[in-house]
Image 1 (cartoon, protein in one colour):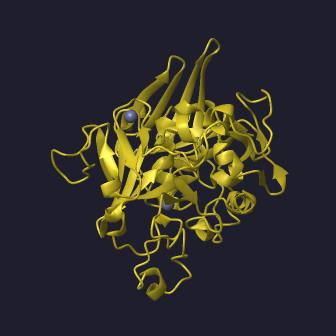
Image 2 (tube, protein in one colour):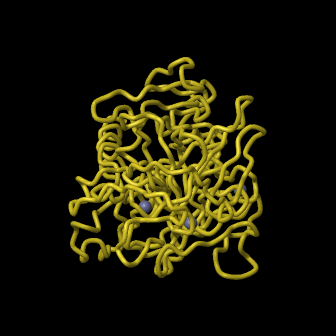
Length: 414
Ligand SMILES: [Zn+2]
Ligand SMILES: [Zn+2]
Ligand SMILES: [Zn+2]
């Protein structure tokens, strides 16, 4: 029996399906912490699951987009019948796959941008919304395709994280320290590739152990993998207190908290840490499991740091970052509007997620943590960031509830 799973990016310009090898779901995959994955995606770790062959064209169910309108049996024009398992009214009971016996039509990659991140790896992301969809490893035995798990329907049931790989590159353990077990099963931590030496927990690279936590620099560099997007974050200043911003879902659930609370009536400067300090030295950071972040990046865990725009300067210059429409914007920074007044910014060469911001609060920017330079502070940059540990953004509506629980448990112990 062949198993096919549907996937798509956020803007839906790329809707595809993939074949998964393992007849008994879920298949196991790894969170990759390597410097290339982090800087090419902007994520604190990237996650791809191996697929059979190449990505395939999506087949639409009768009555839905692309299907026949008269309710007849699906016919793709080739005369071959396609059997689709009917979905249940209750989405939870609906099987994650459709079973078909159908000749393989490879997916048209025309709507994707290819980025060769090394001599043997090519990545594909959506040219309009930046969602990373595929990673291809070019081997002597041919190309091996992986799919970004966050782009898959019911991704959490299709694939389960069993290990952290290339944790050595993070220097501080990175996200591996926040996710130690899922459903009670320990997630292994490998120094390098799968099966390499296991790293103890907690672990820090010697280069970080020698620098004291308090002797931090005055600037934190950030860059995407191709180097087109480069910026520097500065320490909180007087101007960092100026933005007025409602609380993010990371701090108060937007589903379950009253609007009068979310609106931040006391004008708390919640992005500055330690909280309520007159001399804050860090910024708040946290993980988001919302479906917009997931489909927009291709990955289930999107980690953000909340930084005032005045504390972000372009490259090594002293020019403040400008995200306005106009000449001041970094050349390769491309904007995608997720919904009215909500913007995402990404590198149009390597596809790395860089920023998220809202028209209502243009002075406070969410910075994608995977871009931060790990060399001096580690991938979690704890010299600069205070990670929120009691809540994850949109944890109630996360596609993968096991992952949400695992992260919350890991954060509580971190
Ligand atoms: Zn897209
Ligand atoms: Zn989100
Ligand atoms: Zn780039």
